[in-house]
Length: 226
Image 1 (cartoon, one colour):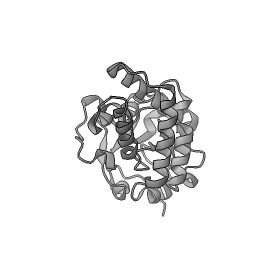
Image 2: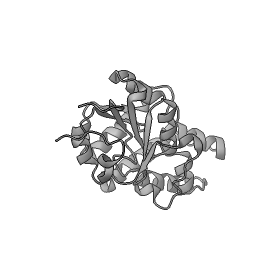
Image 3: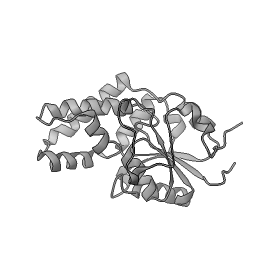
Image 4: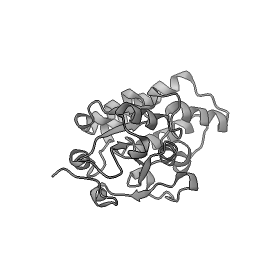
């Protein structure tokens, strides 16, 4: 079943399919505080959401003049995954949307392959995603560059203009726009509660929504399996 303007839906993972960003953000704030770097959730939302770990580290180095010790990344990732094992949850109604969507879809994330795969397993979405997982490790530049989304479109044989991106972060929205794709911004994740949802001009999605329960009623309505 086709849709007049969409042939492929590309979901971000963290903050869209799984409610993981609040866990990641709180842990990063706490770990950096131990090294004398004081940031808050608003800073994380502005500078880190939707970006790969190397990009985050480059931002810290540039703004705070801190080169994180070599052991920091492994220790952080280990503690983060332990926290995921205990507290990671799937976004409400996401499983039903993925099962019911009558269009090809896949996942494109800035997370590492290992983290993304395990996160999807914990959230019990791995069987739905299957081999449709794409990560920033596959391209030279992560979001907000369009590389990952363009890579997905090429791999799937779909014109970028006929792809719909579902993102939560401004950097992800920017990446989708730069790729020439349609973009919906999901704002229902715990990490965006209490945060400003105003978007700068270069990161304005075509549509904004905060409940996957409403996914199939959003215009233009995407086809649903009967």
